[in-house]
Image (tube, rainbow, N blue to C red; front, side, top):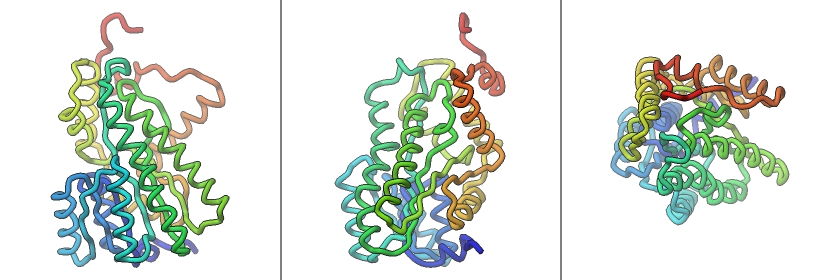
Amino acid sequence: MAATAKERFAVGTAVVTGAAAGIGKGLAQRLGEYGMFVVVADIDTGRATEVAAKIVESGGRAEGFGVDVADPDQVETLAATLFERYGSVELLINNAGVESAGLLWEIDPQRWQRVMQINVDGVFYCLKSFVPRMIDAGAPACIANLSSVGGINTVAVQSPYIVSKFAVQAMTECLHQDLSVVGAPIQVSAVVPHSIRSEIFLTAQREAPTTNPTANAVFAAMQRDNVEKGLDPLDAAAHMLEQIARGDFWVFSDDEMCTAAVTRRGRQLVGQDPPSSPRDMLARMGVPLPEGSS
């Protein structure tokens, strides 16, 4: 019988990036409840420390670390410090990520680069620093990378994020294969969240505002839906950690919605169909198409 999350994650060290808010915070808190020592890693050192303190106040064990995953030196320092202090990492969750809105050709190059540095390079840097040490430790471990339904299906006016999550999905599948080649006892899971309450859309609009009215309307609608319909991060974390604990490669926050996304992608590829029209999506969101669009 497969282990439950409370059984599998009752001991050991877990590292969660982007853990100061949203999905990452929910995962960190649940792992703290289950008994793991949780490394709350985030670019916002203050908030990471606060999350760690709350885990400790609730009876768990945790420590906050400030780290920008887009900086390979900071990631390497984090990995070296943790392995020196604790000897092993049993669970690495690469969650840190940012969003961005706008038409592809209107995206500011600096913003494009920052999204890729965090969402893609950040995962690579963590794998490069942690995987060799996890292999050398020789103990069973797990790596879970946060992809997205946006890493399965393309969506209009979110090109940087979509491209980055497709890359994370591919990187995760390659990691699974590469670890199999060397026979390492490290499980790999691709986590595919659908809609979990977070600040990702608000942060994107604050840090990289766009003047495109359609993109702004889409992000306003997505933020509205995230608040009204998004899953509670703690509930979503518990659901996803159960799947990771039993050894699943595909890990969904919402089984029905995520299965539907994978099915749509499969049908598109089998049928060799072009990407779907954004009309239906925009209509569901209540966002009007620009004049003259087809």
